[in-house]
Length: 537
Ligand SMILES: [Zn+2]
Image (cartoon, rainbow, N blue to C red; front, top):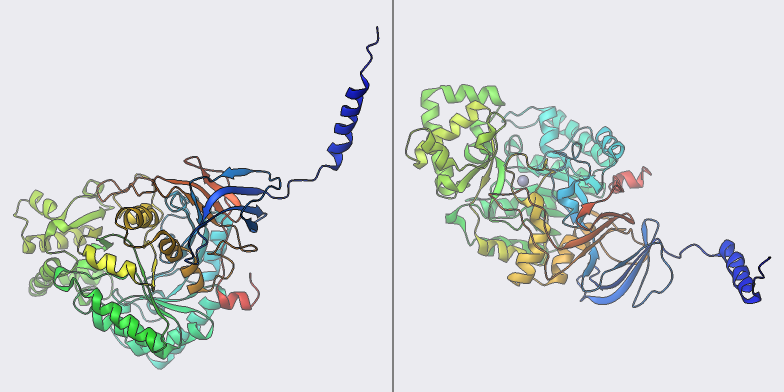
């Protein structure tokens, strides 16, 4: 028997058949609904939906009902621009961990490298290598004054000749044309410390003419902090470009409280029209190599062999012991050898995480400041370690954070998960601001915090198409729960991812969700103003 199909079924079937081929593809690739939108500008949050098409934000409205290929319900959560980290050492690790999980899991979508005067050179092949690596976050960089000076002069303490200054100018220019966003310096380090201010100004002028900024790890963050802030301002003023005190902090108990004066210097400079700003990480400990932190610059001239030779001269060694003891007592040692923590010792990883006083005791002597200085020399002779230095005051940290000219930067790197005992800032900077300093301590508002992590750094380096949630801009987005967002990484257990960030979107693609990194690698190399003008982006 043939079955008769009822007419109504035929009509329904026809409707399906005719509507399917002509069905519109979804209007949007991604729709984020019901979020508290914090747009990055500092404006108060508002409830809304945000739609993404391709790599850009297509629409933001109180309610969007058009179909989307994918919908994320952000009810109860904050939808913010992806965070832009203006100070990273991400080349340490980005090629081993191209997903940069430690950053992306915090909501960071753009990493800026080349700080502290240290950048890869030349820049062009390095950026090409990054682009070929297929990384998850976006990547940009500064060109480093120290790296340039080492290449032209070496790590020696002398003035540059006119010809050398010309050569260095040319290298800054090339760096900018290759894609840098400005010039960085590390005047605390060798060889930056051997560089007269006037020489830095000459290089800064070149970066400024090509649209770049100047950003500096200052000459002295301890007793000489005020003159160092003055110098940073002067370089911006005479170099004719925006200038930034990077990872601003006050080192050493005797200097605590002086952020009142440093911020006043910044305010006065801004009042007379100098475009001076600040960035900061939210921890009361810094991190760098043990020798850079605890030995005077004159002992470090000329590289490792020269340093070892100096330590073998008894008279000089005694003199250096005095100076290293002073640095432990008054500066980065925080007044106590146990305020110095070893982060990574490649010649003996059992030392990673240990305290300098405790290591001194295991060498059979009392952990006095002088004995700890001997331990420092022993470490340097063995091959050196990186260290963590607990020598910053919480009140200075909060005062700097509250300043309107302060943005957030981690000064971190891309750690290999579980390896060594790095500073927790690599895992926690941005979420620590959102959890500890916004929610728990109420040091700043949530809108201010997001601004300091997104629109402010974007505007600082001239990234006009990122850092704000606005139609037409790139879809770099972080979604987090303001009630639970928090860092988990500690100085004792740094390898811990944060909690409370639910989704991270880079260039329109979901890179992190449900506690896991996705297979997407949407990061791009971002090129600075001079390269853009020359048409390479
Ligand atoms: Zn630095």
